[in-house]
Amino acid sequence: MRRGLDSLVRGARIDAVEIRRESCVRLLPGGAAEFAAEVGGLRLSRLARRGKFLWAELAELEGDDAPVLALSAHLGMSGQFRIHTDVPDAHPHCRARLTLADPTLTLDFLDQRTFGYLHVEPLVPTPDGGAGGAGTPLPLLPASVAHIGRDALDPVLDAVAAARALRRGSRGIKQVLLDQTVVSGIGNIYADEALWLARVHPERPAHAVTAAQARDLLAATREVMGRALGQGGTSFDALYVNVNGESGYFSRSLEAYGRAGEPCSRCGAPLRRETIGGRSTHWCPRCQRRWSARRSGPRS
Image 1 (cartoon, rainbow, N blue to C red):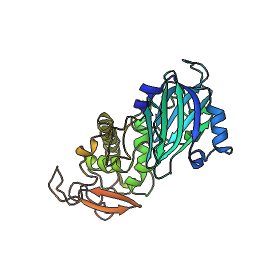
Image 2: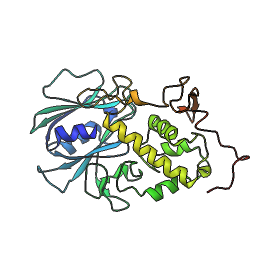
Image 3: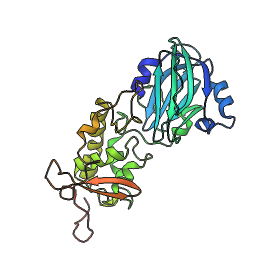
């Protein structure tokens, strides 16, 4: 989504704003009126991302390297941005429409389940002084994103510290992977895929994950997410498409998620599925053995 938006709307001026559902700007006290007043006339500068949070640096002039605000977005479970070169009839799930100029485009925010939102907020310094996220060199990020950990694919991510953080506490390792304050960007599907690749059971307690397993797991998340991005993400239905409405094809490469009962491509054992921590979870019972305190040796 970030790549698609950056290639098409970077530099465009926001000429008009139509908020079609007030809840999509619910973080602003003044709602739709405040949102429109804040962003109107500003230009969409660099498009940046950290984990599941996306933002555009808003500048007053084209090419301005000193953004004044951030137009941030969280897609929730079903949010999409769709770009049009004309002004089509609004989609039933369109929650906000931005009319852009230079180039002239229509940018719609669609959200069927309405968990997503748009926000306009100040940019604040990053806690570690590094670039805010993918797509920007500036050590700034939206205030609402400051508590989010660095993305698994972020080159600034301290891999040693991240692997150490994955081993803290008694939660199951999958729950730790989904905690966006530890390492961000890892969703339910990619957590299952990374755990399969690293041969780690999703319920293994974080404190029982060895240093080597934590390093392997972090490397697995990067491999899985990198391959998924290369294929446009994972699309199961029309809710998961890019800014042009095109589907991603990584679902054809999944090894664990959604394959319960099918043979593991590595060992042939039937894959299993359970709901763990409220999330559908898939693993191989042979390759990803359950952890037992009785049969485990000293932690290494």
